[in-house]
Amino acid sequence: GPRPEVGTTVAGQGDDERRWQLMRTHTAMHVLCGVMWRQWKRVVTGGNMDTLSGRMDFEVDQLPEGFGAEVEALCNAEIAADRPIEVSFIPRADAVLDRELIRTKVSLVPESVPEIRVVDIVGLDRQADGGTHVSNTKEVGRIKVIGHESKGRINKRLRITIEDAYQISLALLKKREAKGEVLVGKKIGVTSKPVQNMLGVHQPDFGFLTDKMHISREEKMSISTELIQPR
Image (cartoon, rainbow, N blue to C red; front, side, top):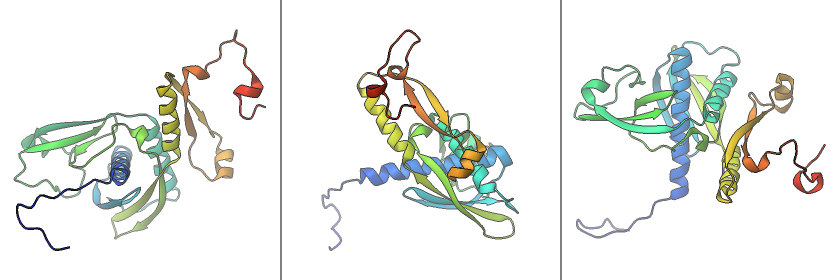
């Protein structure tokens, strides 16, 4: 329609599902950035993202064979670590002096900005950022490195997607917690390399354990009603 006149009252509605997917993707990009910086001290030279997919360019001359699988495994290990995500603000003069905060090859912080917003994936990645994020890495889902390519002599691009498998697991956990169950631990599977190769995956998977799943030595359990596939 026609452009509204200045002063016209308008109403809008946000797309919550799209926003949530972008939040998950944005945090995933920071996880990737954090892994690349921590493991190899590589700065970002470019990037872009959409809902549940993104790309990030790094200052790297060569990518060895198996690099994508290694990065994918490291990223998903950080997601599984349930790292909280915190936001704080610091003076610009302090931020520009901290190389750990400015991860891009060229600082993109305008001179006119007096205070810098800092997003901290606690224990992994802390950098200047103005976007929205989830509150914990476990809300991201599973990162999959779907490709990498050369964008110049010292620029290499990694492409990722975000999968929903762990989001489903998290939703089931929230239903259990709503019924009064308490999260007490996690289980891990597919730890054998031959099994991973057979299934076409690059890292173990994990699931949540609640207090209702704990059976003491003295308790009795009905195999036919309590277990899905007893063996």
